[in-house]
Image (cartoon, rainbow, N blue to C red; front, side, top):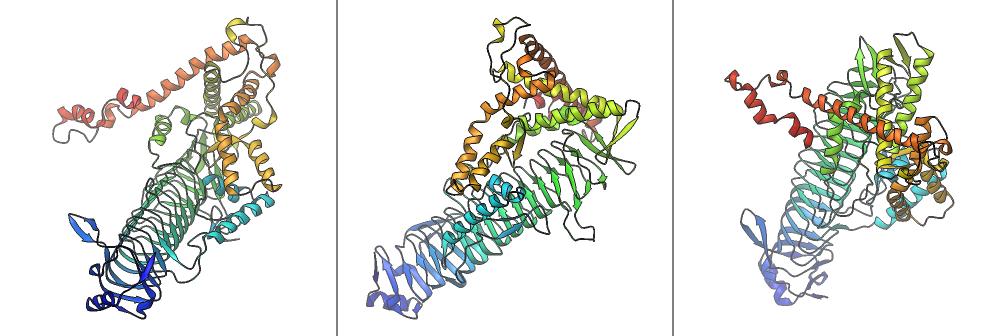
Length: 633
């Protein structure tokens, strides 16, 4: 309940340097005291909560909640709020309890707006055609469908209509600052909603945006940040001179150190500093840490960009229409360059400069290198890389999200998605070796592959597939009667796998059968889903059903590996897969260990023991440890 000011209170406020266009439009709540309102200009309708509570401002400084040296226009100020030193005014804002506002230039809502909701982000293709309208609860999976499933016009139209509904719900002529949020040392906030417990400290200018935040998952906007037409998700941090325009920054994302981005989407736990992004769909764990590194017009996921990595999408004919797809786990080395359009397969390392518009989707886990101006592929070599093994272990531990996470993520290296790529790679290798039996090298999808590398790749792919399937068999994932009771020549009792579990996709972190997504989107088209929340519930359900669907897929993979139908696979066949698979896993693990040990070879100690060569090895071990310890991390 609010009441009008008493005459004595008006007199006290006037004596303390306060003025009002109309004192009758200033109302106060129980617990209000005039002592803590000084040098304030009131205009419009202003509501003031209780004040006078002690607030710790840091460095041992204690202030009393209240309003000091400010101008308030059409504002509601909650209980225990501290507003101190506002250069221009705070206008048309509702400020929740416990908020701290100190040393700001302006906070205002200029008219009816949606605070970044509904902003169209031209991701992946800079020239348009894959626009994603952002909103507060946007997930990587929904964004992926809107951007990548343009062939499903009804689905995209439904999604956009649902987003438009959310935009209407968010539209207001009043801004909001949530409970216990802090806005200090900031120049200007215009049409920005700030969630509870968020921190805005030292920002430059923020306009038309939302900073989502909660007590469990607070977000932070730091020094020198300039952002326009944006949405920040919970647990995110944008800091130290970052510049954003038309961007979505997802949960646990960090963007800092002068990184600039426009028309880009960043999802769970991505971390970008120093460089720049334009028209980028940055799936989970997209990382760019270096100056002069550009990510442009592409899809990235679990990605790492080296210093000076670059792509170009403008060939000065039809404009910047070209796009790149760089699938899960790709890495670009320092100064790597790709002329778009191009498609890079999962867990591929790119070194050198590449101009031939490669498509290596069906040769995963490879090295793509430059040799005498040509692009050469080394199939499957990344399966033995310690870097790949280390990535798989480190990603879950670097999840900065708190509370219930929105983006759905599977971290495993081997899944039906990656193993399905390997099955296709085995087919490609066998086809090329059979067609060009005497060639020293072959050209495949505009890259060159030397025949010895092709043979080696076939071996490694087969080892990886058999090792994965043997692991599924050992864990009892594949359905069927127990092998122990069956003779070798007895049918294993495997059921023919349904078509719906054969092809799998990586839906920006969610590993799922393609057919399951198609069925779900058919439900969308038929109007049987009530809204985006229901769609997301179905996606979560698919994630929980992962193990059961893997079991059905494994039978299909066994058919491909053994080159016989499920009903013809015997118990002996499965025992052989288990035995060979164990040996394959050991061989691949030995390759990973050898790769790790190379980092601890004597040559790598160069630069250690700076003042005494006799202590070089001891200095190296003190800093780097030993290979065995690193492998066990």
